Image (cartoon, rainbow, N blue to C red; front, side, top):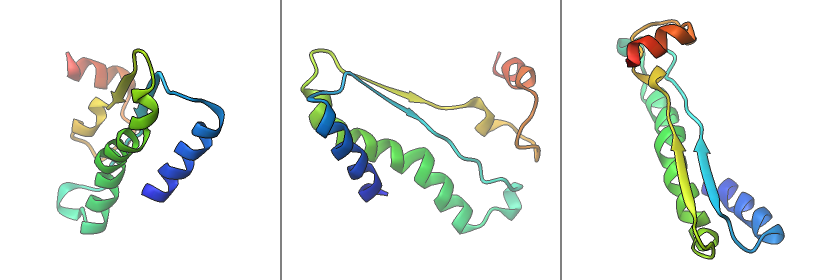
Length: 99
């Protein structure tokens, strides 16, 4: 994972001298009922939802620090707390549950 992120940072560094905003917008569900989640499922979800966010900020930090006013936006979804086996419940249902 860190190698892929480094490639992205290198790509951006070749074209820009700083980064004003970094948006982490990725998420993953286990896709199984609680009793069926495997260690591999847990690791896959944790890698995307937690590790990737940390390493993106960590590796982009030198470019962010060169900005006059840098921002990091981490986007998550309420759907992760949705108690259903349907991985794509209706959007209005998720919105109502969050109210």
